[in-house]
Length: 157
Image 1 (cartoon, helix red, strand yellow):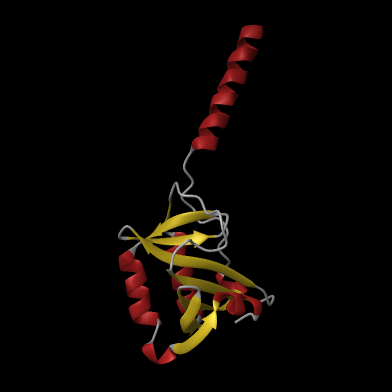
Image 2: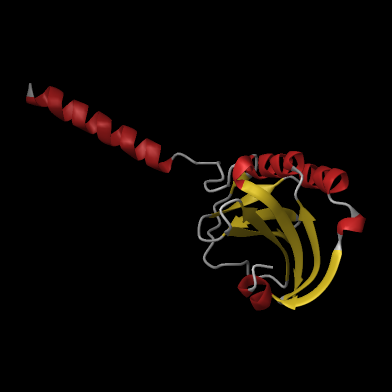
């Protein structure tokens, strides 16, 4: 009887270990489409915001969130608020409760990444992002800005 209990216990431990090491490809903390009132893409170069696009169409918000949702989790860790890059895109989701969720997109080694601060880094599809940008982000919606990243973050920009 004791042997049977040990076998069951060992089996449960093995299952727990397998579940723990199983890769999780989901983006863990994306907001729900209905909770987002809009989002901004801000081109950050050397710590300054230079260009800003604001998207508030619900269909476009849903498309963008689906692209992020289908990204692949990498083994890289997010250890800061923003990537240690000279150039990146700040993605700022305006939430219906008045807050903001800020993430970033950057390029490295000919790959495109979406980084959720302290959560994870996910690889994006160039094809999906390019398609979204062509269909949803219009040149006439671009706003030329010149603001330090700290000012953008302080002023709910």
